[in-house]
Image 1: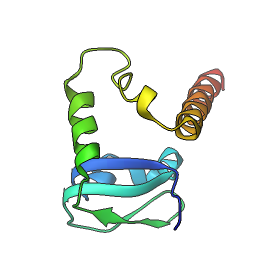
Image 2 (image 1 turned 180 degrees about the vertical axis):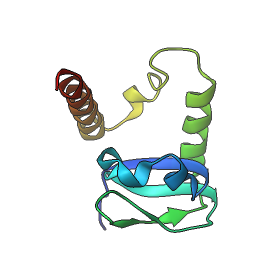
Image 3 (image 1 turned 120 degrees about the horizontal axis):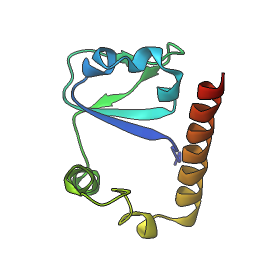
Image 4 (image 1 turned 180 degrees about the horizontal axis):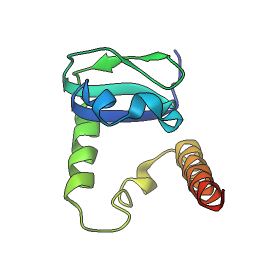
Length: 109
């Protein structure tokens, strides 16, 4: 009965989380689920919070992920936006807006 709102990170191996430096990047603290084909380690974020790992990938996520990888259109997620509930789309756009603002702020600093 809990609604989780956050990001999902997908890797071949769970250890790729550390290989890519996500554990040291506060931008990845919003990850609520880490999906990997092979779970070879538990993961933590910059706040030392452990995030759940799973090898189960729901079919809808698998289909959307495949489309995002294969599409040449920009932005690659444009097809799924109309199917999202309004609250989800708004939350997502707000998060993207903040991420872009933080990137610009970092450049100015």
